[in-house]
Length: 381
Image 1 (cartoon, rainbow, N blue to C red):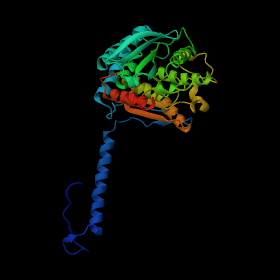
Image 2 (image 1 turned 90 degrees about the horizontal axis):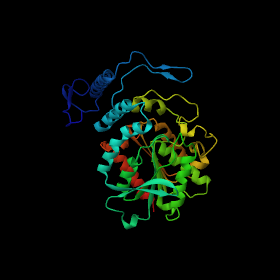
Image 3 (image 1 turned 90 degrees about the vertical axis):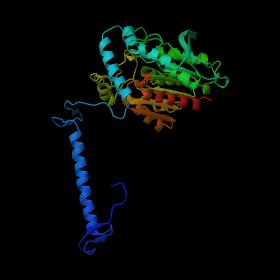
Image 4 (image 1 turned 120 degrees about the vertical axis):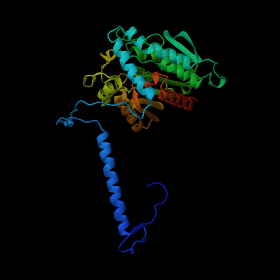
């Protein structure tokens, strides 16, 4: 069909007795349509037969919910083999350490990934205190170029606002420091259950306020992944309500700006990305223990629900994967920011689980870090 031109068809009838017939001849058109119909039918049958058999159809209920029969979901064929394998490895590792203390659980899951990240992106690391808050400072191994010495990135780590092994912020700080050539300060903020909202926002604001004494806001970026992404959004709201200027850029990665954690991915992402049963529907209340006493009318706690707060966000990068339980929150946040006229960019990786870029062996991981680095470099002036 797509090769060299076919020889003229020889047909009887209006075009003459078995002589070459032009393509617009009715007989030729009919024959071509017949062949095309047969080809489309066979292709459709082949596609249908390739799909997994489902014993019964999806049940659509009057309330809008859907009962989905048991089925086998394959890996995404649009993600790298390394990415799919990393997801399976994470699920099995998570199950192996389930029930252990939080510190042991997070160290077992992320400790080896941290070491691989350090090997892939050479940096120097030192502990420090800023405004009484402990931080880790990451700098490129070869030092900071003079034209970047006046810039700074602030990272807020993930961990559900309840957990962080030593250097958990390094998962995002190490690659970004190496790729941007900019100093990254990772904030070791207070965690639940010892602390409750707004303790973490207060710690981030304390660091930011101190940094502003030497670094103008147009040279500062703030970013985080998972609970750190949520905290980045909450911190931006906190800055507004406490008279602090906005930084030049923000990265809300594998997260949204609403701790209510709603949307389809609460179910789909948990099943396909973590191999876990979906989290129970919790109304509009947050599933995070850190947020249990926060009022839903507080824009510092639930910034994604307040248009006037979102309208004042700086240029914001939003990242997620299609198998990320936070995908719905990320997509919703991006749509709200765009509606408010904010320079917001959404990047979604097919097949990516929650925080998929924490594994540097995955090709899509480097793609994500390159996007983060370019976004910050383009906006810090």
